[in-house]
Amino acid sequence: MAEGRRPGLQREGLRFFGAVGAGLSHELSNVFNIINELSGLQQDIAAAAQGGGAGIARLSELAARIKSQVARGEEINRSLHRLSHSVDEAAEVFDLGEALALFGALAARPARLAEVELELRPPADPIALSGDPFALQLALHACLKAVLGAVGSGRRVEVRTESASGRVRVVLASADPVPGLGSDPVLASMLGLACAVLGAAARTEPDGHGGGSVVLDLGAGGGTGTGDP
Amino acid sequence: MEHLRLLFVDDEEELVSAVVERLELRGIDAVGVTSGDEALHRLREERFDVVVIDVRMPGIGGIDVLRTVNRRHPEVKVILMTGHGSAEDSEIGRRLGAIAYLQKPVDLEDLLTTIDRATRSPKGDERDG
Image (cartoon, helix red, strand yellow):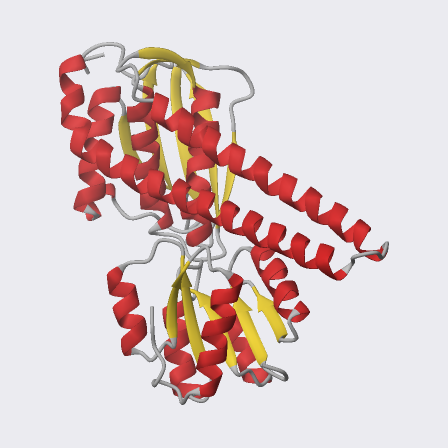
């Protein structure tokens, strides 16, 4: 890993971190709002059911709904925690499947806002990568933005990994064509910096059937920039 | 607020069902939907006095619904809600005639007070934020 390259990521990294952090914070607020209303409803029903047995089942059901929201909040918080720790080390060995799981959790909100169904197909077996896990999240986020900007609402985007000849690729495929990655300068800058740190390359590919993909080529041997690119 | 018909719109289904039930316990005829599209559909089909709607939702958001309400259902009062409100959204909402712009979490008693004020005054006369 070229440690000296990482400072170049700071501005774009902060932009990414801010956007994702704000989204997760919004999701957590939604959870708290729901818990707030459910507990308020619990109080309402308890007050209305004083002395009667009919409200007990409803109170029990509400307790289950509250528990479900707490579990949802914990999952969101875990994603925030994992994203926060992804900046700890500029170079480390990590599992691509786990990194994609975090990406999927972070991508859920932007995909939902774009009304796009995100289908994550993690690798069947662990793939050890060596490099900057935060730069990988940044690159994946930029690829996702490119795809979400191209596909229509109601569409599906598949995220899959491909390994061939010792090379590992992450493919974000859609049924709609994806324009060149240079069409959005902010996104191109983010992607360029992340790829430089990773020693990776990103490009768009038509699928021959009217659709397209953004392909993040992580290089030979599954490494993500173990040395200077 | 008897006979008041209220449309509550938020993309969080659990929130919608809980708030609607709480409003109904207080005698308000409340209907909940989870998208701007559904809200516009229900507004075309049914009569409502007040719409309480989240600004930020997938697809059609609260501001766009407010614009459509102004064109097609000018008698309907609109209260906007937001989780992380921006001053710009608030200003747009005010300019478009939203009765109020409430920050989430919205206290139910505050919402009831706002609804009560909204239904007592002509549209555009009662605004706060």
